[in-house]
Length: 328
Image (cartoon, rainbow, N blue to C red; front, side, top):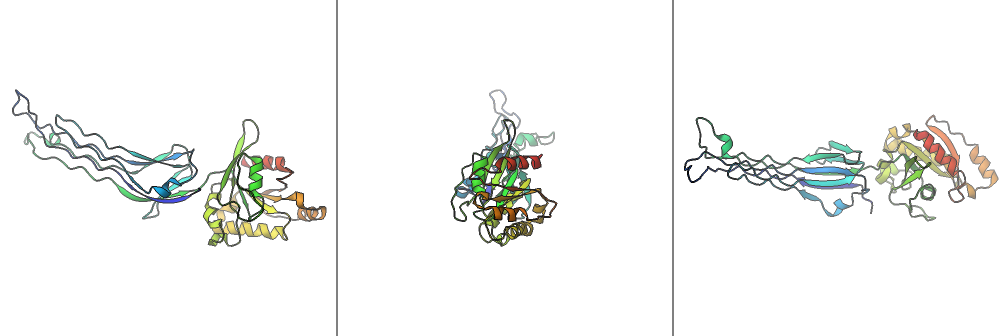
C-alpha cells in the first residue's frame, strides 16, 4: 500500500537525576562528595532510507518514545545515556512541525538525518557543586524532560521524468515497456491508484527514473478524481511528459486542460522542460495521424513532440533518447 502522508507523536527521553553521595571507605570516614551526574535522555532521530518508498509503517505506529537517562551513581559514576530512537523514512520525505506548519527538514538524500526531538539533559550530582566554602553539598540536580512534538511527514517522490495524462492515456503501459516496473494495466480509467517508479536504462552506464502518476481529470487541483492526492509528486520531477491519447476527439484541448491543472496547482511546474507524447498511434489511421501531426504547440517549454505506440514499440527508442537529452 502506498501512503504518502502521516502524522506521528515523538517524545525524547528524560535526563537521569544526579545523586547525593559521599565517599565512604574504611580509612576515609569523612570523604568528600562523589555523587555522579545523570545520563542524558535519548534523542528521536529521523533518517532517510533509499530502500523505503512509502510511509505505510506510520499508519500502524504513531507514537515513538526514546529511552530515559539513568540516574547518577556513587564514586562519581555517570548514569548511562538513554537509547536513541531512529525513525526511517523514504528519501523525499518532508518533515514538518504539525503545530506551526514549519518545515524542519527536506530529506532528499539517502542517510540524511535530523534530531527531531532532543533528550533532556541529565542532572548534576552533588560532586559537581562542591566549592571551597561548601565542601559537602547535600543536594543534586534533577534531570530535564525531553522534547515532545507532533510531526507531519509528507512524501514527495523523486524522479527525473514525470508522466502526466488523463486516465487511460497509456502511462502505465509506457512505463512497463521502457522500464522493469510492472504497474496494473487495464482498458478502464483509474487503473493506476498510486505512483509507480521505473528505472529506464539508456545504455550500460546511463539510466534515469520515470514516475507514472495516477490519471488527472479536469478539476484535479480542487480535489476531483485522484489528482490532488498525487500532484505534489510531480514537483520533484525535472522533466514533464504529457501523454495524450491520439484517438480522442480533441487532443489539443486535452493537453490544454492538463497543463492548466498543473498551473492551478503550482504555476512553477510549467517552467519545467516538457515533452508532448501522442500515444496509441497504432490505433490511428493515416488521416488521423496527418491531423495529429498538424497540431501546433507554441510554448517554449515544450521541447519535443513524439508519436508512439507502447504496444508495438513504435517511437519508443526516440522518446527515451529525447528524455535523456533533456535531462542533460
